Image 1 (cartoon, rainbow, N blue to C red):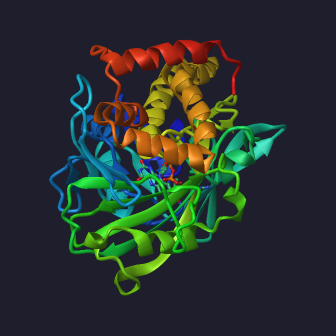
Image 2 (image 1 turned 45 degrees about the vertical axis):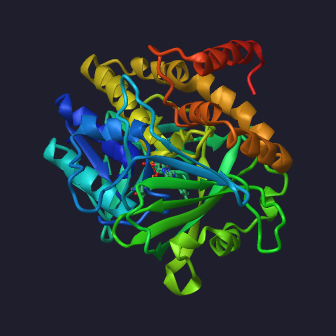
Length: 410
Ligand SMILES: Cc1cc2nc3c(=O)[nH]c(=O)nc-3n(C[C@H](O)[C@H](O)[C@H](O)COP(=O)(O)OP(=O)(O)OC[C@H]3O[C@@H](n4cnc5c(N)ncnc54)[C@H](O)[C@@H]3O)c2cc1C
């Protein structure tokens, strides 16, 4: 029997299990669905995510993977800037787009090659006794088996049903995102830039509280989406799928988007960000990825943070199992805080500011007229600032960070 059980076979669960198996630990992943399974996502990978995939041994030559050189941002009718991914001492200067059904299946297969047991079409339910995770029931095709792993890693995504039964909850004072995406066929699918619209308007020209994206897949299709944050005043009144249709109507004509080229109905989902879910650890379990609310609030990126928290959790769990000391699991929240705490705290301040559409529009219009400022902003938002390369922008960030450190936790 595996000493470690991972609930959920998305990016967080696959990464956690792969890193544990690589260190020689027996580990089982249970995934409720069968691969290839769909996941509502923009399918975009920044250089941060690429580095994680490289370290795990992902094969980037697969035909489903589309190479991305940078980001194109625009606002209004005339302001547009194209920025290649920055050079960095640690991260590659390229990104990618790949459908989640392909990405997640390939990573699960990679984990299997490293020795992970992957149980598909299997749903895990916690057996809670006196508030403690006593066992895990696995349901597969009508049959239930009970497991008693030493440690359970909860990687069950933003709904976090398994975690909630153990008492995890979302911090309401932290931001949350909502987004919807759909696929279109497009003559510009081979474009090698992610595209982001920073000031959304509806068909009547009125400002909408959110942003839009087009991520080309290189296979004749594009992933089109819109997102908004809970810091926007009207956010509860917004229907993201109709907002998406509005965005498709005003998006640049070169994408060739129109109703007849839409492939299936757009689908929406929640983005749990800034470690808004907790607690992150219990006596014999911990949470990773969206289950921990790990998405970066600066840009809504969650895949890399699912890989990164999965990897950090694997190191912590590996040590606890090897030393037969579950008390070591308690170090996990502090490690996450050291790694991401300050950066996410700054993000929370930023998303409060841009929750006001006129502020967002002013920032977008100022930034898009100033290339150095915009390139720096890209580095900040994609968490690609270089420790060894302190440009002026980075010093500004450090100065801001010093101020934020003195503020009470927001
Ligand atoms: C519309 C939208 C667009 C997005 N765009 C991007 C983007 O472009 N780039 C980016 O980096 N991030 C993006 N994100 C965020 C990203 O999708 C998530 O951060 C990421 O999927 C988190 O991975 P995860 O492994 O934590 O969770 P998930 O990917 O949700 O995986 C959880 C898995 O657990 C399984 N599961 C759940 N409960 C159980 C159970 N009880 N038993 C067994 N299995 C279970 C589920 O079937 C699922 O496969 C987007 C999110 C949304 C909603």
